[in-house]
Image 1 (cartoon, helix red, strand yellow):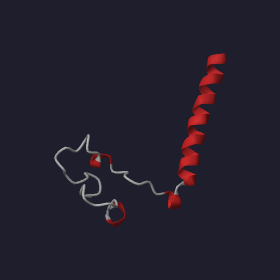
Image 2 (cartoon, helix red, strand yellow):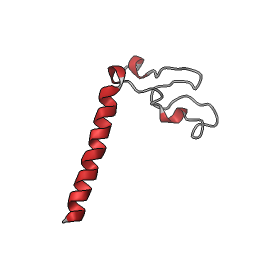
Image 3 (cartoon, rainbow, N blue to C red):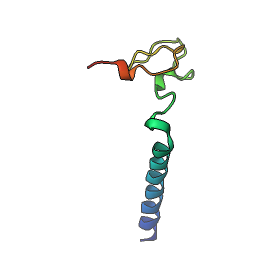
Image 4 (spheres, helix red, strand yellow):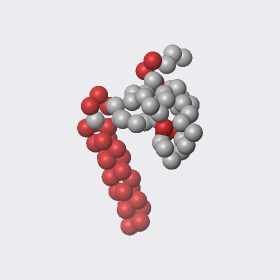
Length: 67
């Protein structure tokens, strides 16, 4: 039973930490959200598979992508 309470407590702490991180960011935007732009993952300098951002560009193109 102690393990269950400890697990629930740790999960609640994790969710609270994520919520605080989202709340504290200006306009809810996170810098560098394109994971494929990491130099460890993208050694060839390819564009982001989701938004098309090049490694030399600062902002994600997600806002300008039309679906």
